[in-house]
Length: 472
Length: 54
Image (cartoon, rainbow over all chains, first blue to last red; front, top):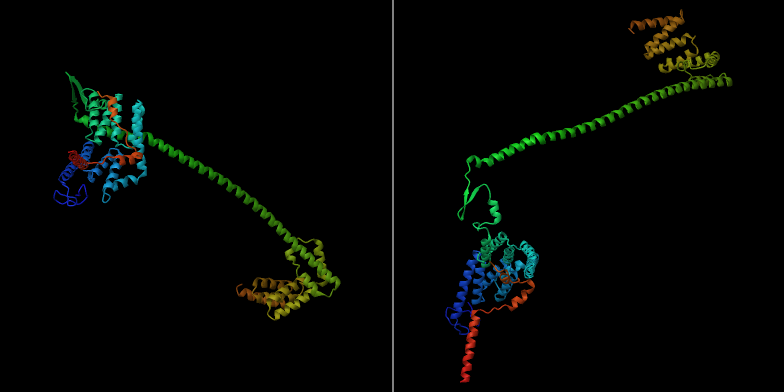
């Protein structure tokens, strides 16, 4: 504790060691201030904010330096919605004790939330406007404004009380009672709230002082029997059997059963029909798509058949053209051979070369009679010479065991001159030596049949016998 | 029965934040010890004046 005059720290004595003043009275005042602070703290603990405020004010009147009392007073002001008063106390507290002061925390809490501070200011302004409306006798507007105030800050006791007063003025006793009760809930020692509550209670229905009109209407149920006996209202509870009490449980069970039945008989079939309908639509759609694809496939198959026909036709045409080409080539070769013969009848080699491409078997019946006639005429003129030329080449090849070349040349020689037995015999030998037994047998048969009584025929006979004996 | 007008007089406008500065500066912070000191001072001055008059 410090001296109130010089600020020197005091000892246990009644005289200040700094200025020599008697501090006994001062000590007594500080002690009394603390008593009031403790009283205020206790009252605040049970939410008797009005009583706490009075006690703390007394405490501060006795000792303005009682920081705890001042901070608590600020806190109570803040709780009741008087934020400016609260801030004032905390600012003063901070000025009186700059260090280690809980007021710092309170002020920081308010300052660090600008939106909340703005809300608080708006609340206060609206309350003042509402109060102004009251003075102007615009009570409805005042009620609306106060409702807004309380929606922003439900702990604003003064607004609750003013609204309560307005309800009392308007005859809304039940609402007035509610507001008074809310005020008392916030501040249990609020005298004004008690006064208004008593007024509201006294104006409510006789015998229902503890209940609202709305409560009575709600309570007017089958649970109680009401009747008047003289001046008193008797409220008697109705006796209920155990079955009636358990009726609610049976009701719930019945409700569940009915719900399930409704689901099974009403909702489920509808759902099944809906799903079936949906599936049917899907099937129809898929079927239509399938039909469309089948039609496409048929169309493509028809196109393939048409194209195949066209291919066959073209193939035939190509074959025909090939035949024409071979016939045409044979004609050209024959013309060339005739031309060579006319130019130089001794050029047997040139004619042989030209006629080598003429294959009468391949041409078949496609050639004209004129072609055949010309060919036969040429053959009668140069056939033996050509045959001799091919025979010589073929025989040389036969002797040198070149049977492939021998067969090719001797065949040509036999083609141009079929009257030479040697040509046919060596051709047969060449086939035999080359392994073509069928051709060999055929050629030997020709030798035996066409040239009987010749040595070659005898030799051919022997060869045929060998072939037959060998099992071929 | 309540008198509405009389009751309404009990409600004073709330202090707005703009007024906080004035409120803080104008607040009477004197406590009992200040009053006592002033009383003693006044009493001392009164005694001096009486002595001078005599």
